[in-house]
Amino acid sequence: MYNETIVKELGLSTIGGQGKPTVGLEGLGQQGSDTWHHAIAAGWQHTNANFKPENYQIHHAFKVYNPAEVEQKWEKIKDSDASTGRGNATQAYHGTDFVAASSIIKTGYRVMKKTSSGGAVWRAVGNGLYTAPSASKSVQYLNRGDGFSRNGHGTLFVNRVLYGNVASEFDNSQKRLDADSVYVGGKQTGGGSASRFEYAEYVTKDPARIIPAYWLDIGRK
Image (tube, rainbow, N blue to C red; front, side, top):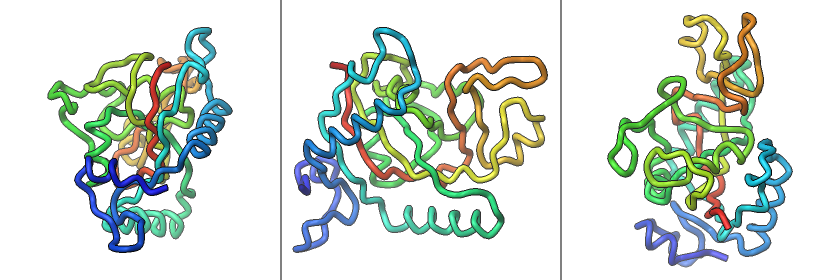
């Protein structure tokens, strides 16, 4: 069911008389929340005893309606990638706080110099937008600011992602520089060295390559 309260709080608009937002969120009800909780649990990678999908609750699940210019730019990149053989769209997660999430809905992703609370942004492997194939990586970044926490409550975005030309963290600097995205973690090794990051994530330089498809209001029970 369409959730007009959320859309009004975000300062978004609706299509007159059609009951669908031009930019905003459409509630998926309890069934949608349950479906996404099952999907998250199936792809959960962390094995810590006190950090499991059953420790988290999806309070609300929404389908995202992005601004037309955000969708159009993403589709243009998708067509360009297809013509050059740079891969297809995939799904990945990004966790953030509610303040940042509302801005993302209105304008699309941006690589921010400061957090929504005004602090400096710390990025482990350089500038770009960080996404992960497993929600267990992204739910650790739900709190306002740039704080790492497993007790957060915020927005977990399920995104449509175009990683494009992907380099590994172990590739030479020129290859990483030329790549659209850099893959880190996931127990990969290179040159006899193991990744500093146990669980996989991608760093994508152009935020236009990533658009939210679903907004999950999720938090620790």
